[in-house]
Structure formats: C-alpha cells, structure tokens
Length: 195
Image (tube, rainbow, N blue to C red; front, side, top):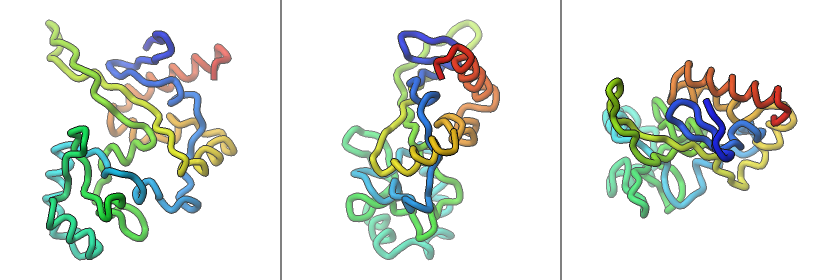
C-alpha cells in the first residue's frame, strides 16, 4: 500500500484517489439503469465472459428482445470496439442487448458492469520474478457520467463512498485480502484528515 503522486496503489493495482474520496450509491429507482441503455459501445467483456454468455445463450434467447436477437444473429454476442476492446453486443448503436425490462438478463453480469462506475484498464505487464510469473499491471479509474448524478447525491446523503458501494464487485475481481488492504488505506487517510 503506497501513495505516489496522488496515484494510490494496492498490490499491483493503481487507482485514482477519487475511488476513495467520492460519494456514490446507485439509485436504480431514479435512473432506471440508464448506463445499460446509453453509450456508444457495449460493456467491456473478457473472452471467458463471452464464452459464458455463448454457453447460456439458448436459455437466455426467449427473454431477449427481437431487436437484440437480430443484433446477436448479425454480429454475435460481442464485438471489438474502435479501440479494439471486446464489448457486449448493442442494439440501435447504444442499448446493451442483454438488458431486460428489470435489469441485466445475464446469469452473471460481466465484471465491467458489476464494477461500474469504476473502469479497469491494463496498463502494462509486471515482469516475472523468481517468485511470481509475469502478470498485468491494472489501473482503476472513476468514470464520471452525468446520468449518475442521482447516485452521487444518494451517496452523499447516505455517506457511502464509491469503494464502499462497490465492495462486492471489488472483492469479486481482486479478492477479500485486496479489499481489506484498500479499506485499511481509506481508514488511514481518514485518520490523517484526507477523507
């Protein structure tokens, strides 16, 4: 755990300080899950997540809208966006094909959706050492989007910071020990009057 020029580090993950400082708590009742409806690309997905979606597509198919079925028939469950990142299929150039009337239809949401509004980016590779194989250096940033203003207001009102709201997906992605280290960092910054 260290703080270097405003960039925080927990394990091999670099994160922007606003993940600890900003308030955030989704208010789905107010926004209706607009982050699944608006945008110019689908949600980032891994090859494993694509395989999982494809393996469960037959069971999911009857619950998809006709336009989602047509989009998947035409281009598959995922595609490469202009930056070359794999993302979920979208309908009408903006809506996630796997969004139903009451939320995500997928058995398990992609980790990028579960972590939102935190966005993950691979920044490079940490070379192998005598004790560990080479592995990615990950960066986490808070993606600010005007449609999430209700979530910011609710977070402030209820005193919930972004990292607290996203406890479950952060543990899902990085593990309990990593999250406890992040929480300890936040507590130390609070004691220092920074949070």
